[in-house]
Image (cartoon, rainbow over the protein chains, first blue to last red):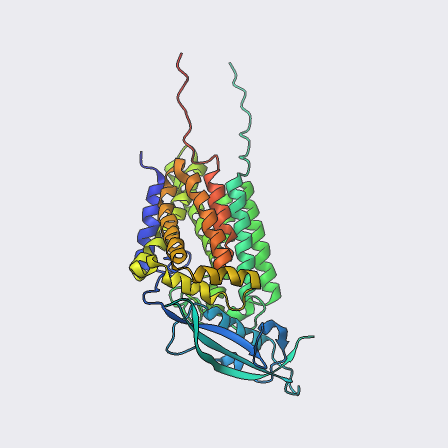
Amino acid sequence: VVRPAPIAFAAYVATAVLVGDCWPIARFDMYADLRGYDESAVIVFRADGRPVEIEQYEDFTDDTLAHAPDPRGVRYTMGWRLDETRRWVLTHKAPPGTAPGPVNVQVGYVTVRIDGGPHQVGDFVVLAEGRAWPRS
Amino acid sequence: VAAVVSPTPRPRPTAARAVLVASCLYGFVASSWLWGGRGEVRQGYEVATLDVGSALDLASLTAPIPRLGMACVLVAGLAGFLFRRRELASGAFAFAVLTVSAVLELTVRGVRIPGLELLLPGNLLAAWLVGLAVARWRGAPDPDDEAHEVVCGVLGATLVLAAGCKLWYGGLDWVGGRPLALIVYERSFGAAPGIADVRLAFAERPWLGALGASFTLVTEAAGGLFVVPRLRRTVAALLVPLFVGLFVLMGILHLVWVALPLALAWSHLGVPRNTEAPAT
C-alpha cells in the first residue's frame, strides 16, 4: 500500500521546483542565496545623528524619506527595515500647513564585514533625510 | 433480529486540527497587520503569477470594514473546518480568505512570498483539504487519517526544500557559517542590549557560525523524515531549538513552525494502529 505522506512530499517538492513561488506553493529559499556574503548593508534610522527607532517620530514634512532609494553596490538582508521606514513615513505625514519638525531625521546604512571578525566599514551613508516631530 | 441503528456520532475536533485553525488565525492577523490600514498599495508588483493585482481594487480591501468582513468569513470557515460542519466547503472559504490576505501582503510589501506565519498554515490547510477530498473520492476508510498524512508530507517537503535551496544557491559557503555569522551580526544593530551582546558573541566565533549553519541544514534536511510516522516526534523536537535559535539570533519568531510540527507529530492521526483481531 502506498502511503499518502511520501506522495504528498514528492508532489510538493516537484511542484515547487517546477512552478517556483506561487501561493500557496513556495521554495522556501529565504537566506539561501548567500554565496560570497562577506559584506552587507545594515539599514539605520537616525535623528539628529543618533540611531533611534522611527516609531518615535511623526509628522514628516516631505516625502523624501518615503522614497528613500535602496543601497547600491552592497548586498543586504534587512530590506524590510527600509520598507518599514518608507511605509511609516507615508502613513505619518504631517498635515498640510504643519511647520517643519525640529528634528533632522535620516535613513541610511552602515557597511559591515565578517572577515577577520565582525566590524563596521566606513561611515553612515545617507539614503534620504527630512524633518519630523517627536511623537508625544 | 432487528438491528438497532444509532446515528453515527459526529467526529470530535482533533488537537492537530485545532492547532492548524489557531495557526491560520494567527497567520491572518500577522499578515493583515502588514497590509491592513496602510492606505498605500503598490499594484501588480511581483504578483504577476497570480494575475489578480490589476483585476481587483486591492486598496479598498485594506480598509477596516472589508478587513473585518474577511476576518468573519475566516473565523466561520475555520469553525466549520474544526467542528466538521461541511468541512471541505468551510475550509475552502477559510483558504480563500488566506489567499486574499497573501495577495494583499505580496502587493503591499512587494515580496515574492508572504510571511512564513501565513505561508505554512496556508500550505497545510490546503494540503488537508486536498488530502480529505482525495481520500473521500477514493472511498478511504478514514479520510482524516489520510489528510493528516498528506499534511505531514507537505510539512516535510517545505523543510527539505529550505535545506535544498541553501545548498543549491549557497553551497559550501552556507555550511561554512560565515554568511550566517554576518546575518546575525547585522541583527545586533538596534537590538536590545542583552540580545545584541549574544548576537555579537555569536558572530565573533566562527565555529559557532559553522555549528549553527550545520545544525540548521541537518535539521531542515531531516524534515523529510516527517513522512515516517515513528520519526515525527524526533523531527518536531529538533525544530524547537532551531526556531528558538532563530528567535534569539535573528529576531524571527515563527510560533507556527514550532506548534504545527509538534501538534502533527503528537496527533493520534497517522499512527499505525493494530487492527488485527487478537489471537485466540
